Length: 226
Image (tube, rainbow, N blue to C red; front, side, top):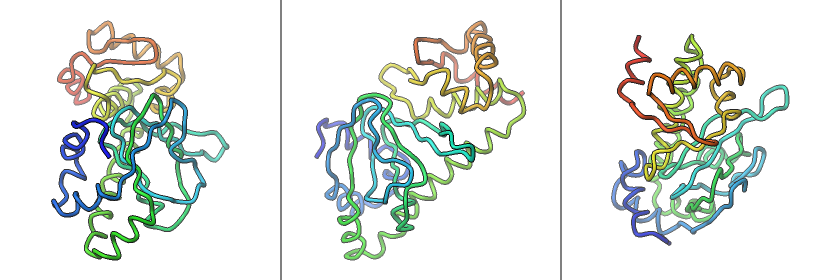
């Protein structure tokens, strides 16, 4: 199941899965199927029937949702340890978002038929899956609350701190284009450029092509508390 022996340890260290009981962890992992996705390949798209849950092992995924004007809005990006797909599955409904790999990504896929059987044999596991929905709802509410913050630079810093939590820690870079980041922060591209370069001049971040790296989280957090 695991191509890399560190994958299991990474999942055990993640919030939701790491907090579950040993029996649930073992039984759920036994349902997993290894999957690989190329950059730009969808794990699933908005409107698709729910067919299972995904756990990102390595790489990164981008979540988009359609706005009322028909355009897709970039909601969030997340890397290893991220679980998604639970909400539509539990509701027996269609997908509310699209999830697309932003780079070469490895994941575990848990088909709905296997999860149905798992819960049928262990009804108490329903609570564990609702705990996953609770965690993902907490993330969604955090994103909405941060978007409501007054001040473009403060919104930018809050989003960068959030994205950094889910980024690969091997090199510290957050892989995100400035167009996508502008969408996430709800500012124009020229405004984003100015705010990013302000942070660069303060020595708080480093910019690369299609990526950002935080240089001083402590000072960035302090900047949000002013």
